[in-house]
Length: 264
Image (cartoon, rainbow, N blue to C red):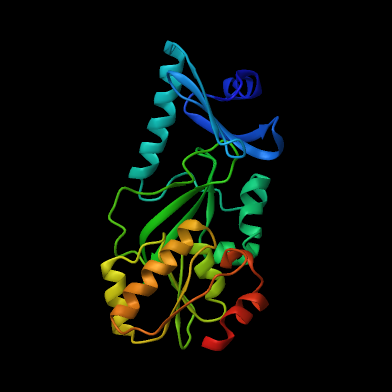
């Protein structure tokens, strides 16, 4: 169990319902996750591999604050598109702009994609438009104290399939921005996760093109690559896997082209 002095003061600074990556006295970097729950404070140090816990008695103010956080998230999930929209990127917080700039997107491209900032929840909203129709959206946390990472509308996303570019092969990416970037080089489909859902599998079979699995280079992404490629091979679909040093969205166009050269 972690020593209370090493994490509890940081957890107490959080609003109820919030969590944040912070530093720990075991070494450099933001290696510890602290949270302020209604009835306790928690911590987990990824370097030490140990938890922290301190019970507390919920106050009326805590309950009111937690309800506000949950109500705001629930309202966002029900919205057609979260309002208000801040579309002038020069008015966004730096963290919101940097998240998109790191993915290689220019202000012009951000505007083309209809991406905007939602000041009420301090999230970047990505509208997903297919054949001219809004089918889905994602509200991405960009501030260090926010969780969960994504908020989405409460609808079935099994058939949602953001697609970009054209080419001789289809590249499957994990997230929307990676598909945008790979779509600069060839055809890219975003799975919005690591699973290949049946409607999308059916579309792949109908397309009759070679497939490249290029999910993020972490444990979950590599597991997804293995599972998807196994499924496609069992159905006779030509498939290859790319395991790059970074997420596709974090690579330059030249590096993306280099990774895909043999499939273009």
